[in-house]
Image (cartoon, rainbow, N blue to C red; front, side, top):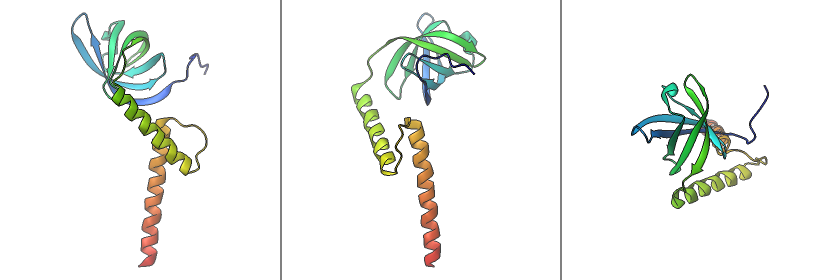
Length: 142
């Protein structure tokens, strides 16, 4: 399949809230991937979403002005028009969390850069393996 995106998209699984300023309406959505200029949203009733709206992502404390680029059944591709500054404390906490994940990956011998979601998956897998080995060790002692 031909990739037409100019910027790489990163996987996400964040709760979002779409608000339509003209009608004072709002709807919940799921942010599935993001880039510096846009995102893919999943929601019911995507066909009823206006062409322009505000996208609030509470986890990051940021509000985007978004414009619909494409629609498919329950999915919407949006481009960001302007970004309001996120809460500095949230941004610092997120950067600190990412650095911690990268340190843990480096300690485990993972050299290639990974997305935060990939780091979390790898860390979960390694923790499960560690727990399994500990159980086996305890069983051998008995």
